[in-house]
Image (cartoon, rainbow, N blue to C red; front, side):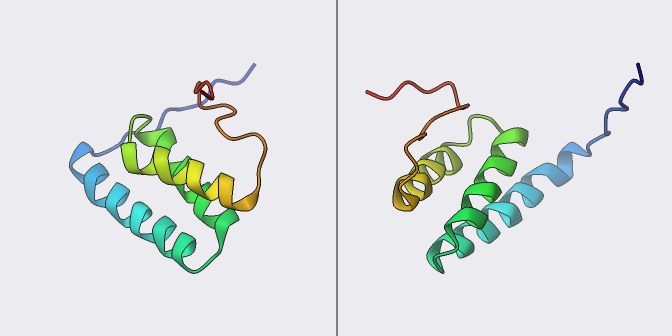
Length: 79
């Protein structure tokens, strides 16, 4: 079994990269590209799982798409 190498992340670059990724995702969202927006939010959440705006807007995008699986894979329990 092959082992995967972990990428070394420059922590000083993470903040600006997350900000750029968030801006891209929200631009997709505002322009109605909901699938691209949702993927962008998921990408952000892989790096920063507790990012509150990405969590919220991912749910909004899923709801707008009519996705019945809102919260699936996020560990969230619908209330």
